[in-house]
Length: 378
Image 1 (cartoon, rainbow, N blue to C red):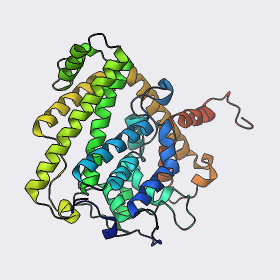
Image 2: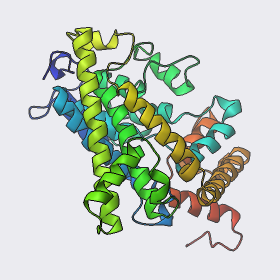
Image 3: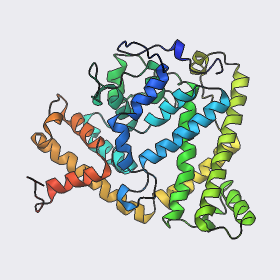
């Protein structure tokens, strides 16, 4: 690894001291703990763009997360970084998302406005440091300082006012919220952009929300689809989509590697600490590629994320979470017993709702509001 990569031997350690593994580095253990967590398993039934029951072929939070992890490892390998740490950041980055994707987060944010707000990144930290209760010696996963720091700051230094959950934890362990995270965390964040931009085109085409003709005028994306169609004029649609998508991913990853390597050379960074003190992100796309991605994101927002069929689905999802929050706030004694013990009832309700999968949220809504539903012995 390069000298500015995260070095396991230089880790600041864990909040609760543990004996080191004889077979795995501290970052490998972090990654493994994330994979074995309950929150990670639930990603299988949480929305990426399409609610889980809309179709089995569309991405879920879990499949999206695995794609991000693969890209983060590949890019980190090219740059001589710590692949295990990059994979850990990628695997954890969406753990705090509630059901129904951004619609669910919007609903919880609105419901929690008077109670300190809701932020999926802060919820991820809460899961990793408190809500996961699978170990005998501590709550949370007791991850290394570097892993927690990178997860909280993967999008850059935090701006005040900080989310409540992050403020509370930072009093216990200072994550240096005003600096940049490691290069591995920065890479994982940009690989998140690569993955969702590419696969949202894929899912949008397969769902019939967009058609090939709409992509032709987009910079970079249009050219790639045209090249593939020209080279393989008789290619079946599914293969055409996949071939174009993989070329988009390869192009974006190559640009990320090239631009980041150029920034590293220009900054003459010697250590991981130098990356944190850089005062600007070191991992980046080229200016041209940033413009291409901006055009793509604008297109996806208008044509996919705000498509009327998606709007109908997300509207229903928002109502489900709002109904549940309002009900439990008025009657907290109806929460499951393990969720009732708290001095902060609204925050505990948000924890309960954010941890639900799409289908469990629908089921819970039915249990409570469908008067024909058989509660006992169901």
